[in-house]
Image 1 (cartoon, rainbow, N blue to C red):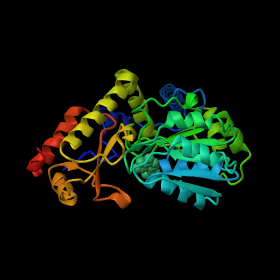
Image 2 (image 1 turned 90 degrees about the vertical axis):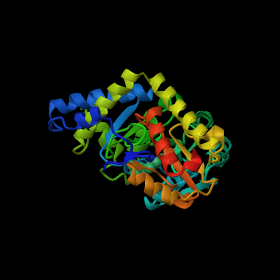
Image 3 (image 1 turned 180 degrees about the vertical axis):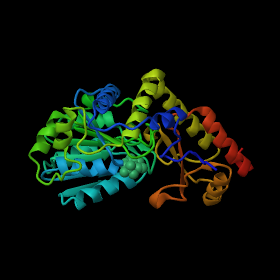
Image 4 (image 1 turned 135 degrees about the vertical axis):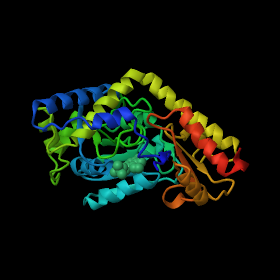
Length: 357
Ligand SMILES: Cc1ncc(COP(=O)(O)O)c(C=O)c1O
């Protein structure tokens, strides 16, 4: 039995996307691929509001997150850490042999503009990483305010993970001054996993060009050289790129404003459902994510049992991530989801635990 996914990625895939993935195969050095690649990167530039480079990498997000570190971190990196994925990015930075400091926040808290200013004003750093939407805690950090601070530090690479927010909220990459914006497609993009997208500003490309130890697979220079021919350095996941092509069309058919408003509406809907049942939101309301809701298990319900029973009824439910597993639960509301999908989940929960009606 297929379990309908309400976990924060991978998410449910629309049948039109699955159909697009079964398009006949083409060779990636054929002109048909160049056409597909060009169309997809143009669509992405429109979605990301960028005139800079947009590259397609066949990997999960962490491949590119590691790649960005290898290409862009020179002297020292400030890794802003406020949850499992940003903590891991710090670890990855160190594993790449880079000098780096973790600037830590309690889980559930956002990265703040003040903390960014404080860290960068030391002059120690030539790069910073942060996660816009910490999927482990359901926190969306105030990116526009942080971007304003970053304008004071033009020599510091601004590297941002938008894995679970890209396309669900407006993220104008150039206006925000992001040097490399990175995301995988299995979350708010609602595609199967295996494709990651990243941008590179002119400044990022200049930095990368001088960097030792870029490796090959995620070498920004290789991506730039191949992009000039609407291509990728090595064989891409062509089926997923067909899927991306179709999904971008679907996003523009829906309308970006409508898509962002739908995500905002779903977020409010879920927050209202959980709080009216006595569960506290894990982050402060103003930092709550627009794509998933992380709630404290304030009523001490048996989350493991609920997850198991929902699984038997055909729903995949998340009972928290990392060190807050069991103390929190997360409901995803991203991608192609609608209120009626959420109503199905809520109905199933109440069926299992009538006390939550
Ligand atoms: C915010 C964020 N960054 C990075 C990742 C890691 O992505 P991947 O497993 O695709 O490498 C995730 C996965 O959940 C995530 O939510």
